[in-house]
Length: 421
Image (cartoon, rainbow, N blue to C red; front, side, top):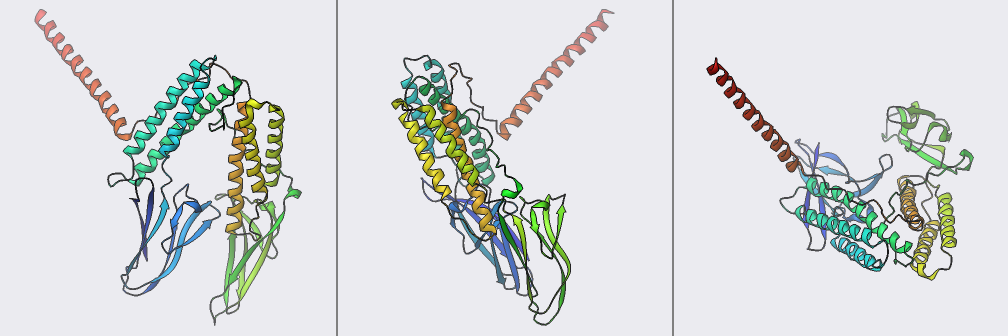
């Protein structure tokens, strides 16, 4: 069996585009055979980004926290089948979003016209405008087209993300200036200058809930008795001491892969027999309730800090919206049985809490005293590979010319000395 994958891009219209993940599976031999297809989807892709699976099924890799498509098909002699998985093109920053940030920065700077923050804010606005122009131009140059490879398109996006990150920090700083001047900046769309890492959940061992990890082993032969060795990897969050009861299985640890597993050797299975094992483990995923309580408490403290000042009404409205989103997460009902869907659900919930925590920190940071002479400057976009080599060759050429001039002058001097003698 031979299976390989190609990536190509196709434009739907001028406002939206898609990525087509082309999976081609072929049977090179002269007799029919079953072929298993399993292909990991690109990074950053979520279930919301999938347009069409092209007839394949969607799976979740618990160990690598990644989505994949799979199927098992029957291929005839020399037969080839092609599956097109369509994805939204998530490797682009919408131009409307960029223009909107530029317009907002301009409006905020206008509020600071008669304040001590105006000069610094104006310089920040200039940096913001330059960054927006760079991102828009770079995206146009690396837009989906026949002459642009997927690698170029995605690499340009990753580079622009770094610019976008600094751009949002600059917008956030201008918003802070407006707050410091006693005015309402409206909804806070920028980010804090020094967003910390998400706070880890600290729980005692006895505070974790218990959940059952089910393992099923089946002898598919209708006639033969089989003796097999059982070995199943446990999710990456688990250590050996997180296995509370392995039943008749044993617990092992693979230090090279940093994975805990359960195993049993020489298990005898009668024809068509299925044996199920229930392994009790600590639930390392449904642990977000303490974070929800902590975020609610922090929001309440910020609301008390703001008090009843009407000039900060937009900030309090923002906090109320955050509370609603946190309560919505708190009221979510996840899967009951441990499996790919269970782990994926609570991992996704934790990621959404990470984003909410950043937004809460953003408001907390905005209410701190602001330095009028804040450090300015956006990161410069790194040169392309072609430009880098051009610079290197230019330097080498310059050094070569200098070397030739030095050599010729040295030779001329040597001849002059001989003539003098």
